[in-house]
Image (cartoon, rainbow, N blue to C red; front, side, top):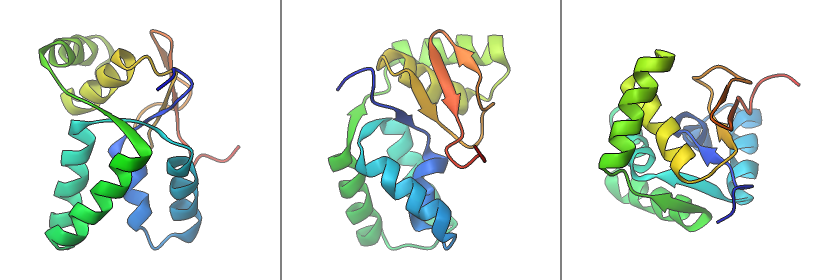
Amino acid sequence: MTAAEPFFDTNVLLYLLSEEAGRADRAEGLLAAGGVISVQVLNEFASVASRKIGLSFSQIRELLATIRTACTVKPVDIATHEQGIALAERYRYSVYDSLILAAALQAGCHVLYSEDLHDGQRINGLTIRNPFAAN
């Protein structure tokens, strides 16, 4: 893993399952280039794929295996938790979004792909990019 690899928020990876072809293709292209995620991203993906999309757990396991093959997976530990809480307090993001930010920072990534956060915002050397925003 290098700092040049992006970190993926769950919302970007969920577009792999989208009927919006343009966004699904964009998410697939980004994932094919590799990146970094945290265990939190895997958990959120599984939860949404099960509850909201209605995939079976065997389908979810297969998708997660593909994602894990393309991405380096970082654990969420107490340091991630503490940094996430500090980021939530400072930037007023939700705790869960702040845990994503903390994991990306701890992984040394320079880009976080997310549709939910402020496109272009820089936090401690990490730039948030909405990969679906019009360029």
